[in-house]
Length: 121
Image (cartoon, rainbow, N blue to C red; front, side, top):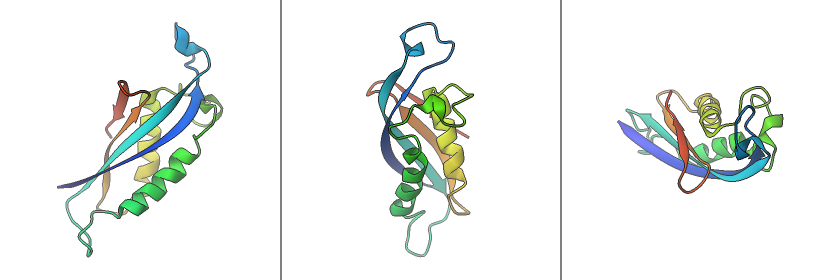
């Protein structure tokens, strides 16, 4: 099994609906997103997937979140924009963009240098 890890980032604001504390109020994060792709076979060039292609797909996905109020963007207009839910959405959207034989093993979203949530499909 081969694995690729690619990291990207974006900045956004959110508020957690129903949260009893400061995070219920509007606040922002400089998010980091780590994705791990896996597969059993390499292509003709000896790569699971070209890093450039992964970065392009990720840029499209997180670009929709960058410098936005996440609570206004589907699905976060109905689902709390927690790090856990952001990780799940990124994972699901990336899974639609990877070629056959490549799977998204997991997505980790970092809200700070010390706090992260991971979604594993």
